[in-house]
Amino acid sequence: MSDTPQTLLSVENVTLKFGGVTAISGVSFDIRKGEIRAIIGPNGAGKTSMLNCINGFYHPQEGRITYKGETRERMRPHVAASQGIARTFQNVALFRGMTTLDNIMTGRTLKMKANIFWQMLRIGPALKDEIQHREYCEEIIDFLEIEHIRKVPVGRLPYGLQKRVELARALAMQPDLLLLDEPMAGMNLEEKQDMCRFILDVNKTYGTTIALIEHDMGVVMDLSDRVVVLEYGRKIADGTPDEVKSDQKVIDAYLGVPH
Amino acid sequence: MQELGSFLEVLISGLLAGVLYSLVALGFVLIFKASGVFNFAQGAMVLLAGLALVRCLDFLVARGMPFWAAVALGMIFAAAVMAICAFMVERYVLGPLVNQNALTMFMATIGATFVIEGVAQMIFGSDVYPLRLFPTDAWIAGEGVFPGGILINKLDVWGGVIAGLLVVALALFFQHTKTGRALRAVADDHAAAQSVGIPIAWIWFVVWLVAGLVALVAAAIWGTKLGVQFSITFLALKALPVLIIGGFTSVPGAIVGGLIVGAGEKLAEVYLGPFIGGGIEYWFAYVLALAVLMVRPQGLYGEKIIERI
Image 1 (tube, rainbow over the protein chains, first blue to last red):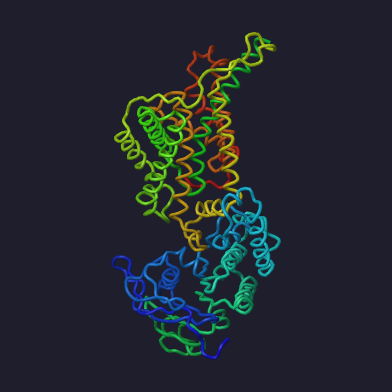
Image 2 (image 1 turned 90 degrees about the vertical axis):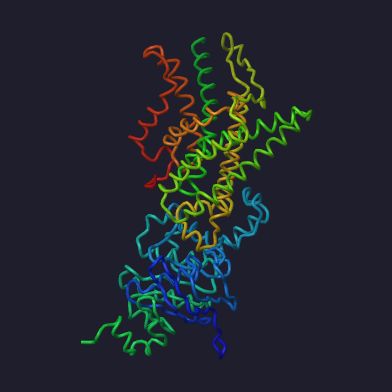
């Protein structure tokens, strides 16, 4: 990494309303290239809404989101994806009728260029294309240690593995920015440790910038470079884990008073 | 030998009629696979495609254009009409309902049915229009083996061949192309599909267009058989038991289901009819579907998880 950290994404004064309910009000923060950025806050603080704004599911009424130096208006989710933003969901959102491998291959959709007629016959350039993308997917499968469930329909997998497949699908997109919405929710200790290791490895091996929402404070403090804290749609703190941990407002709102 | 001959004749004509049921059912399967929506408007789309085709054809022939050229232009015109229909449906009916549940979308397609039927008849008229795209005479086969031979309708054979080609093309499309994979992804989860970069609006346009083109093929064959008329929309009702038998998510299921229904109702009519007073053809498919529902609710080829609908 270079000495002066580059900003990959900046959120400025974003306000998001649903009818009369204000989900996010006037929040600003930035995500630097190559870092792991955590977004924390109590339930209903607007964390998931924030991710939804970043990848284009929601369009904030006010404020600006600048990604790779470009400010965008009402970006659609598939456009965000084509610009290198991948994500996972709070409630696992996999294609349940498909196998693990097929799920991960959908992550390559945007990279496949062969003509539809070649693809139908699976000859010529399409064959080469398919093999090349399959190889990349296999690499990710090895990386996340899910070789044994390659051909299993994902609906049949236990929850922890489904989360891992979801991560694999996001990685198959070779994202520049990876948004993880509670990647460890509902996991046992061992699964959590595995997931932590994968997130760190992804960040290191592929240099992927990661923004994650997580409730497990131990995990957040260990993983992230910087933390932004939301409460009732407002930002109440922003800084390194240590700074945030000792911030009085955060302690009151979220971490609780030490006994 | 006489017995066997007439049995074969009934069986073959039943199977070939079944192919036509399959064609309509295919349109349903396509949309169900790609959006998880049971498209009530498929019958109306067959009517729209048929009317567009036959009216354009008549118009051009009346202006002195050679028949083959008129057919080609008529097909292109009807395909364009189906493309416009697909675009409008995506834009004004389904597009605003992204991330809504399947039942909401199903209700929306019921609304679309009435609009499509109404608009189609307003623009193209509401009479019975005869269509002559395929030969309608018959072959007599196997005269040496069976006394009197077996009568086979040429139109039914054409229908069979065309349906077969369509199925192969669709199967390749779904299994091998990235669009096919994207279609299956969209059916499972809208938000997740968007997040990997699949543009839902485009995918839905494609799938309604393909369903529209299948409707056009069905309309060309059924129209030749019965004339293009409003009652063609009731075909959709015959496709329902076909889907239940074959499974809502399976292209081969739609084909096998259609064949079973076609052959089943003809055989039942001929061999069971005399004992219980005839008229079996009209309800046999539904009773068969009911029986399948009790034994195999997902149909013969359906995916196990169908909690939608």
